[in-house]
Amino acid sequence: MTTRRRFLLLLPAYAASAQTFVSPFHRQKPAPAMSMHVFIGTDTTKGVAKGIYRCSFENGHLGEPVLAAETQRPSFMAISPQRDAMHRSLFAVNAINDPAATITSFSLDMRSGALTQKNKVSSAGAGPCYISVDSTGKSAFVANYFGGTIASYRIQSDGTLSSPVETFDYHDAKYGARGPNPTRQDKPHPHSVHISPDDRFLIVNDLGSDSLTVYSIDPSTAKLTPSEPLVTNTRAGSGPRHIAFHPNGRWIYLINELDSTIDRFLWSTTRSATNPKGLLINAGATVSTLASGFPAAKNTASEIMVSPDGNFLYASNRGEDTLVVFAINDDGSLKEVQRISSGGKTPRHFTFDPTFQWILCGNQDSASITVFRRDQGTGKLTGPTQTVALDSPFYILFA
Image (cartoon, rainbow, N blue to C red; front, side, top):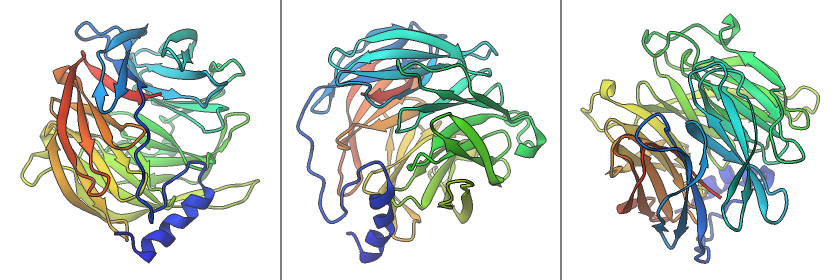
Protein backbone atom coordinates (compact mmCIF):
# COMPACT_ATOMS: atom_id res chain seq x y z
CA MET A 1 0.00 0.00 0.00
CA THR A 2 1.32 3.42 -0.93
CA THR A 3 1.14 6.07 1.79
CA ARG A 4 1.11 9.81 1.32
CA ARG A 5 4.65 9.93 2.72
CA ARG A 6 5.92 7.40 0.18
CA PHE A 7 4.30 9.36 -2.64
CA LEU A 8 5.98 12.59 -1.48
CA LEU A 9 9.33 10.81 -1.31
CA LEU A 10 8.91 9.48 -4.83
CA LEU A 11 7.59 12.71 -6.34
CA PRO A 12 10.96 14.47 -6.94
CA ALA A 13 12.22 11.54 -8.96
CA TYR A 14 9.16 11.56 -11.20
CA ALA A 15 9.80 15.19 -12.04
CA ALA A 16 13.59 15.11 -12.34
CA SER A 17 14.59 11.71 -13.63
CA ALA A 18 15.09 11.05 -17.30
CA GLN A 19 13.60 7.63 -16.76
CA THR A 20 9.85 7.08 -16.53
CA PHE A 21 8.49 5.44 -13.40
CA VAL A 22 4.98 4.15 -12.83
CA SER A 23 2.73 6.18 -10.54
CA PRO A 24 2.37 4.44 -7.19
CA PHE A 25 -1.40 5.00 -7.40
CA HIS A 26 -1.76 2.91 -10.54
CA ARG A 27 -0.78 -0.70 -10.90
CA GLN A 28 1.54 -1.17 -13.85
CA LYS A 29 -0.16 -2.87 -16.77
CA PRO A 30 1.78 -5.75 -18.28
CA ALA A 31 3.39 -4.83 -21.58
CA PRO A 32 2.13 -6.67 -24.65
CA ALA A 33 3.83 -10.00 -25.16
CA MET A 34 6.70 -9.70 -27.61
CA SER A 35 9.94 -11.43 -28.36
CA MET A 36 12.99 -9.67 -26.96
CA HIS A 37 16.71 -10.19 -27.35
CA VAL A 38 18.72 -11.26 -24.32
CA PHE A 39 22.53 -11.08 -24.44
CA ILE A 40 24.62 -13.11 -22.01
CA GLY A 41 28.33 -12.55 -21.37
CA THR A 42 30.35 -15.63 -20.39
CA ASP A 43 33.70 -16.63 -18.93
CA THR A 44 35.70 -17.73 -21.95
CA THR A 45 38.49 -19.16 -19.78
CA LYS A 46 36.23 -21.92 -18.45
CA GLY A 47 34.33 -24.69 -20.19
CA VAL A 48 33.49 -24.10 -23.84
CA ALA A 49 32.02 -20.59 -23.69
CA LYS A 50 33.27 -18.31 -26.48
CA GLY A 51 31.86 -14.85 -25.76
CA ILE A 52 28.45 -13.19 -25.97
CA TYR A 53 25.40 -15.39 -26.50
CA ARG A 54 21.94 -14.32 -27.65
CA CYS A 55 18.58 -15.77 -26.63
CA SER A 56 14.99 -14.84 -27.39
CA PHE A 57 12.62 -14.13 -24.51
CA GLU A 58 8.84 -14.24 -24.89
CA ASN A 59 6.03 -14.83 -22.40
CA GLY A 60 8.54 -15.76 -19.71
CA HIS A 61 10.27 -18.34 -21.91
CA LEU A 62 14.00 -18.09 -22.64
CA GLY A 63 15.13 -19.50 -25.99
CA GLU A 64 18.23 -21.58 -26.55
CA PRO A 65 21.50 -19.58 -26.52
CA VAL A 66 23.33 -19.02 -29.80
CA LEU A 67 26.76 -17.44 -30.12
CA ALA A 68 26.36 -13.80 -31.12
CA ALA A 69 29.99 -12.65 -30.93
CA GLU A 70 33.32 -14.18 -29.99
CA THR A 71 35.11 -11.93 -27.52
CA GLN A 72 37.27 -12.44 -24.43
CA ARG A 73 35.57 -12.68 -21.01
CA PRO A 74 32.67 -10.24 -21.54
CA SER A 75 31.94 -10.01 -17.81
CA PHE A 76 29.84 -6.83 -18.01
CA MET A 77 27.98 -5.07 -20.82
CA ALA A 78 26.07 -1.86 -21.46
CA ILE A 79 23.88 -0.61 -24.26
CA SER A 80 23.61 2.87 -25.71
CA PRO A 81 20.47 4.81 -26.59
CA GLN A 82 19.29 4.12 -30.14
CA ARG A 83 21.37 5.77 -32.84
CA ASP A 84 18.53 5.26 -35.32
CA ALA A 85 15.32 3.22 -35.52
CA MET A 86 17.09 -0.10 -35.86
CA HIS A 87 20.60 0.22 -34.42
CA ARG A 88 22.19 0.63 -31.03
CA SER A 89 25.68 0.09 -29.68
CA LEU A 90 26.59 -2.66 -27.24
CA PHE A 91 29.78 -2.33 -25.22
CA ALA A 92 31.47 -5.26 -23.48
CA VAL A 93 34.42 -5.23 -21.12
CA ASN A 94 37.05 -7.89 -21.80
CA ALA A 95 37.89 -8.88 -18.23
CA ILE A 96 41.39 -10.25 -18.51
CA ASN A 97 43.98 -9.60 -15.79
CA ASP A 98 46.36 -7.80 -18.11
CA PRO A 99 47.16 -4.10 -18.53
CA ALA A 100 46.41 -4.59 -22.24
CA ALA A 101 42.75 -5.41 -21.50
CA THR A 102 40.16 -3.85 -23.80
CA ILE A 103 36.57 -2.68 -24.20
CA THR A 104 34.84 -3.88 -27.38
CA SER A 105 32.15 -1.91 -29.22
CA PHE A 106 29.51 -3.71 -31.27
CA SER A 107 26.78 -2.46 -33.57
CA LEU A 108 23.48 -4.13 -32.61
CA ASP A 109 20.80 -4.74 -35.24
CA MET A 110 17.60 -4.45 -33.22
CA ARG A 111 15.60 -6.53 -35.68
CA SER A 112 17.83 -9.59 -35.96
CA GLY A 113 19.87 -9.22 -32.78
CA ALA A 114 23.08 -9.52 -34.81
CA LEU A 115 26.24 -8.05 -33.29
CA THR A 116 28.98 -6.61 -35.51
CA GLN A 117 32.28 -5.71 -33.89
CA LYS A 118 33.23 -2.10 -34.61
CA ASN A 119 36.32 -1.36 -32.53
CA LYS A 120 38.39 -2.16 -29.45
CA VAL A 121 39.97 0.38 -27.15
CA SER A 122 42.17 0.15 -24.08
CA SER A 123 40.35 -0.27 -20.76
CA ALA A 124 43.21 1.75 -19.16
CA GLY A 125 43.86 -0.99 -16.62
CA ALA A 126 43.80 -4.72 -15.97
CA GLY A 127 40.60 -6.61 -15.26
CA PRO A 128 37.81 -4.28 -16.46
CA CYS A 129 34.69 -5.36 -14.57
CA TYR A 130 32.00 -2.71 -15.12
CA ILE A 131 30.86 -0.23 -17.76
CA SER A 132 28.19 2.48 -17.56
CA VAL A 133 26.71 4.58 -20.37
CA ASP A 134 24.89 7.85 -19.73
CA SER A 135 21.37 8.37 -21.05
CA THR A 136 22.51 11.05 -23.51
CA GLY A 137 24.60 8.46 -25.33
CA LYS A 138 27.64 10.75 -25.22
CA SER A 139 29.88 9.24 -22.55
CA ALA A 140 30.85 5.95 -20.92
CA PHE A 141 32.84 4.95 -17.84
CA VAL A 142 34.79 1.80 -16.91
CA ALA A 143 36.10 0.31 -13.65
CA ASN A 144 39.27 -1.82 -13.75
CA TYR A 145 39.25 -4.20 -10.81
CA PHE A 146 42.80 -5.55 -11.00
CA GLY A 147 44.39 -2.40 -12.41
CA GLY A 148 42.97 -0.17 -9.68
CA THR A 149 41.82 2.50 -12.15
CA ILE A 150 38.70 4.01 -13.68
CA ALA A 151 38.48 5.57 -17.14
CA SER A 152 36.10 7.77 -19.10
CA TYR A 153 35.24 7.64 -22.83
CA ARG A 154 33.35 9.61 -25.43
CA ILE A 155 30.80 7.73 -27.48
CA GLN A 156 31.56 8.77 -31.03
CA SER A 157 29.10 9.55 -33.82
CA ASP A 158 29.40 6.04 -35.24
CA GLY A 159 28.51 4.51 -31.87
CA THR A 160 32.03 3.36 -30.97
CA LEU A 161 34.10 4.31 -27.95
CA SER A 162 36.95 6.79 -28.17
CA SER A 163 40.30 6.12 -26.58
CA PRO A 164 40.25 6.85 -22.84
CA VAL A 165 39.63 10.54 -22.18
CA GLU A 166 40.72 10.46 -18.54
CA THR A 167 42.14 7.83 -16.19
CA PHE A 168 42.11 7.99 -12.39
CA ASP A 169 44.51 5.78 -10.44
CA TYR A 170 43.13 4.55 -7.10
CA HIS A 171 46.59 3.67 -5.84
CA ASP A 172 46.86 7.39 -4.97
CA ALA A 173 46.63 7.85 -1.19
CA LYS A 174 43.83 10.41 -1.56
CA TYR A 175 41.43 7.56 -2.36
CA GLY A 176 41.94 5.99 1.07
CA ALA A 177 43.91 3.25 2.80
CA ARG A 178 43.54 -0.45 2.09
CA GLY A 179 40.94 -2.46 4.00
CA PRO A 180 41.77 -5.07 6.67
CA ASN A 181 41.23 -8.17 4.51
CA PRO A 182 44.79 -9.03 3.32
CA THR A 183 43.63 -11.47 0.66
CA ARG A 184 40.95 -9.34 -1.01
CA GLN A 185 42.03 -5.82 -0.06
CA ASP A 186 45.77 -5.86 -0.76
CA LYS A 187 45.31 -3.02 -3.27
CA PRO A 188 42.52 -0.83 -4.66
CA HIS A 189 39.78 -2.66 -6.54
CA PRO A 190 37.28 -0.30 -8.20
CA HIS A 191 34.33 -2.65 -8.69
CA SER A 192 31.69 -0.47 -10.32
CA VAL A 193 31.02 2.96 -11.83
CA HIS A 194 27.41 4.12 -11.48
CA ILE A 195 25.92 7.15 -13.19
CA SER A 196 23.32 9.08 -11.19
CA PRO A 197 19.80 9.12 -12.72
CA ASP A 198 20.23 12.76 -13.78
CA ASP A 199 23.54 11.98 -15.60
CA ARG A 200 25.39 14.59 -13.49
CA PHE A 201 27.50 12.39 -11.24
CA LEU A 202 29.58 9.20 -11.22
CA ILE A 203 29.81 7.07 -8.06
CA VAL A 204 32.68 4.58 -7.78
CA ASN A 205 32.75 1.61 -5.40
CA ASP A 206 36.27 0.60 -4.31
CA LEU A 207 36.21 -2.87 -2.75
CA GLY A 208 39.89 -2.62 -1.80
CA SER A 209 39.56 0.56 0.25
CA ASP A 210 36.02 0.20 1.63
CA SER A 211 35.06 3.53 0.10
CA LEU A 212 32.83 5.32 -2.39
CA THR A 213 34.01 8.27 -4.46
CA VAL A 214 31.97 10.87 -6.33
CA TYR A 215 32.74 12.85 -9.50
CA SER A 216 30.71 15.36 -11.49
CA ILE A 217 30.36 14.54 -15.19
CA ASP A 218 30.65 16.70 -18.27
CA PRO A 219 28.75 14.41 -20.68
CA SER A 220 29.82 16.31 -23.79
CA THR A 221 33.52 15.70 -23.10
CA ALA A 222 33.39 12.68 -20.72
CA LYS A 223 35.60 14.62 -18.32
CA LEU A 224 35.25 14.05 -14.57
CA THR A 225 35.70 16.52 -11.71
CA PRO A 226 36.21 15.14 -8.18
CA SER A 227 33.44 16.18 -5.82
CA GLU A 228 34.05 17.37 -2.26
CA PRO A 229 34.39 15.37 -0.17
CA LEU A 230 35.84 12.95 -2.70
CA VAL A 231 35.74 9.86 -0.47
CA THR A 232 32.95 8.43 1.67
CA ASN A 233 34.14 5.58 3.88
CA THR A 234 32.15 2.44 4.56
CA ARG A 235 32.71 -0.20 7.27
CA ALA A 236 36.21 -1.67 7.36
CA GLY A 237 36.30 -5.02 5.56
CA SER A 238 32.84 -4.66 4.00
CA GLY A 239 34.05 -4.58 0.38
CA PRO A 240 31.65 -2.29 -1.57
CA ARG A 241 30.58 -3.92 -4.85
CA HIS A 242 27.49 -2.41 -6.55
CA ILE A 243 24.81 0.18 -5.78
CA ALA A 244 21.18 0.70 -6.74
CA PHE A 245 19.35 4.03 -6.74
CA HIS A 246 15.84 4.20 -5.33
CA PRO A 247 13.36 5.91 -7.70
CA ASN A 248 12.95 8.80 -5.26
CA GLY A 249 16.52 9.81 -6.13
CA ARG A 250 17.40 10.29 -2.44
CA TRP A 251 18.33 6.78 -1.32
CA ILE A 252 21.19 4.63 -2.53
CA TYR A 253 21.53 0.98 -1.53
CA LEU A 254 25.04 -0.51 -1.48
CA ILE A 255 25.74 -4.25 -1.53
CA ASN A 256 29.00 -5.25 0.12
CA GLU A 257 30.72 -8.31 -1.30
CA LEU A 258 33.01 -9.29 1.57
CA ASP A 259 30.68 -9.22 4.57
CA SER A 260 27.42 -9.87 2.64
CA THR A 261 25.54 -6.79 3.80
CA ILE A 262 23.48 -3.93 2.39
CA ASP A 263 23.89 -0.30 3.51
CA ARG A 264 21.63 2.65 2.75
CA PHE A 265 23.03 6.08 1.93
CA LEU A 266 21.32 9.44 1.66
CA TRP A 267 22.15 11.20 -1.62
CA SER A 268 21.96 14.95 -2.18
CA THR A 269 23.34 17.29 -4.82
CA THR A 270 23.76 20.99 -5.49
CA ARG A 271 22.21 22.55 -8.57
CA SER A 272 25.27 24.64 -9.40
CA ALA A 273 26.08 24.48 -13.09
CA THR A 274 29.67 25.61 -12.55
CA ASN A 275 30.60 23.64 -9.42
CA PRO A 276 28.15 20.77 -8.84
CA LYS A 277 28.57 18.64 -5.71
CA GLY A 278 27.26 15.20 -4.84
CA LEU A 279 27.12 14.11 -1.21
CA LEU A 280 26.71 10.64 0.31
CA ILE A 281 25.71 10.18 3.95
CA ASN A 282 25.60 6.72 5.51
CA ALA A 283 22.16 6.25 7.08
CA GLY A 284 23.58 3.75 9.57
CA ALA A 285 21.13 1.05 8.54
CA THR A 286 22.93 -2.21 7.72
CA VAL A 287 21.18 -5.51 6.97
CA SER A 288 22.65 -8.91 6.20
CA THR A 289 21.87 -10.64 2.93
CA LEU A 290 22.38 -14.03 4.62
CA ALA A 291 20.09 -16.29 6.60
CA SER A 292 20.79 -16.36 10.32
CA GLY A 293 23.58 -18.81 11.05
CA PHE A 294 25.01 -18.99 7.52
CA PRO A 295 28.76 -18.21 7.78
CA ALA A 296 29.68 -14.97 6.03
CA ALA A 297 33.13 -16.41 5.27
CA LYS A 298 31.47 -18.90 2.89
CA ASN A 299 29.58 -16.29 0.91
CA THR A 300 30.18 -13.26 -1.31
CA ALA A 301 27.23 -10.99 -2.07
CA SER A 302 26.97 -10.00 -5.71
CA GLU A 303 24.09 -8.11 -7.34
CA ILE A 304 21.50 -5.60 -6.12
CA MET A 305 18.47 -4.06 -7.85
CA VAL A 306 15.44 -1.98 -6.83
CA SER A 307 12.05 -2.42 -8.50
CA PRO A 308 10.92 0.64 -10.50
CA ASP A 309 7.98 1.29 -8.15
CA GLY A 310 10.46 1.59 -5.29
CA ASN A 311 8.72 -1.03 -3.17
CA PHE A 312 11.19 -3.93 -3.31
CA LEU A 313 14.94 -4.60 -3.30
CA TYR A 314 16.56 -7.78 -4.66
CA ALA A 315 20.01 -9.18 -3.86
CA SER A 316 21.99 -12.33 -4.67
CA ASN A 317 24.37 -14.47 -2.61
CA ARG A 318 27.19 -16.60 -3.98
CA GLY A 319 27.81 -19.42 -1.52
CA GLU A 320 24.37 -19.50 0.06
CA ASP A 321 23.23 -19.44 -3.62
CA THR A 322 20.06 -17.49 -3.02
CA LEU A 323 18.03 -14.56 -4.24
CA VAL A 324 16.70 -12.42 -1.39
CA VAL A 325 13.69 -10.09 -1.60
CA PHE A 326 13.33 -7.14 0.78
CA ALA A 327 10.35 -4.82 1.13
CA ILE A 328 11.38 -1.15 1.24
CA ASN A 329 9.58 0.65 4.04
CA ASP A 330 8.47 4.29 3.95
CA ASP A 331 11.61 5.35 5.82
CA GLY A 332 13.88 3.44 3.41
CA SER A 333 14.59 0.58 5.81
CA LEU A 334 14.50 -3.01 4.56
CA LYS A 335 12.41 -5.98 5.68
CA GLU A 336 13.12 -9.43 4.31
CA VAL A 337 10.07 -11.00 2.68
CA GLN A 338 11.58 -13.95 0.80
CA ARG A 339 14.73 -16.04 0.46
CA ILE A 340 14.71 -18.45 -2.47
CA SER A 341 17.28 -20.74 -4.08
CA SER A 342 18.83 -19.29 -7.22
CA GLY A 343 18.29 -22.65 -8.86
CA GLY A 344 22.01 -23.14 -9.37
CA LYS A 345 25.45 -22.36 -8.00
CA THR A 346 27.09 -18.92 -7.73
CA PRO A 347 24.41 -16.44 -8.88
CA ARG A 348 26.78 -13.71 -10.07
CA HIS A 349 24.21 -11.56 -11.86
CA PHE A 350 20.45 -11.28 -12.28
CA THR A 351 18.18 -8.78 -14.00
CA PHE A 352 14.54 -7.82 -14.51
CA ASP A 353 12.97 -8.26 -17.92
CA PRO A 354 11.53 -5.02 -19.41
CA THR A 355 8.02 -5.80 -18.08
CA PHE A 356 9.36 -6.40 -14.53
CA GLN A 357 7.30 -9.59 -14.39
CA TRP A 358 10.34 -11.88 -14.62
CA ILE A 359 13.86 -12.15 -13.27
CA LEU A 360 16.66 -13.96 -15.10
CA CYS A 361 19.56 -15.22 -12.97
CA GLY A 362 22.97 -16.38 -14.21
CA ASN A 363 24.44 -19.20 -12.10
CA GLN A 364 28.12 -19.03 -12.98
CA ASP A 365 29.38 -22.31 -11.49
CA SER A 366 26.43 -24.53 -12.42
CA ALA A 367 26.39 -23.35 -16.05
CA SER A 368 22.77 -22.26 -16.09
CA ILE A 369 20.34 -19.38 -16.51
CA THR A 370 17.24 -19.64 -14.32
CA VAL A 371 13.94 -17.83 -14.91
CA PHE A 372 11.70 -16.64 -12.06
CA ARG A 373 8.21 -15.17 -12.19
CA ARG A 374 7.86 -11.97 -10.15
CA ASP A 375 4.67 -10.89 -8.39
CA GLN A 376 4.64 -7.11 -8.71
CA GLY A 377 2.28 -6.73 -5.75
CA THR A 378 4.17 -8.79 -3.17
CA GLY A 379 7.62 -8.69 -4.78
CA LYS A 380 7.98 -12.44 -4.28
CA LEU A 381 9.51 -14.80 -6.82
CA THR A 382 8.24 -18.15 -8.06
CA GLY A 383 10.52 -20.67 -9.69
CA PRO A 384 12.73 -21.40 -11.31
CA THR A 385 10.08 -21.75 -13.98
CA GLN A 386 12.81 -22.66 -16.49
CA THR A 387 16.50 -23.55 -16.49
CA VAL A 388 18.64 -23.07 -19.61
CA ALA A 389 22.16 -24.50 -19.91
CA LEU A 390 25.02 -22.12 -20.71
CA ASP A 391 28.65 -22.33 -19.58
CA SER A 392 29.86 -19.78 -17.01
CA PRO A 393 27.28 -16.96 -17.41
CA PHE A 394 28.67 -13.64 -16.23
CA TYR A 395 26.12 -11.01 -17.16
CA ILE A 396 22.59 -10.75 -18.63
CA LEU A 397 21.39 -7.81 -20.73
CA PHE A 398 17.98 -7.23 -22.36
CA ALA A 399 17.94 -5.23 -25.59
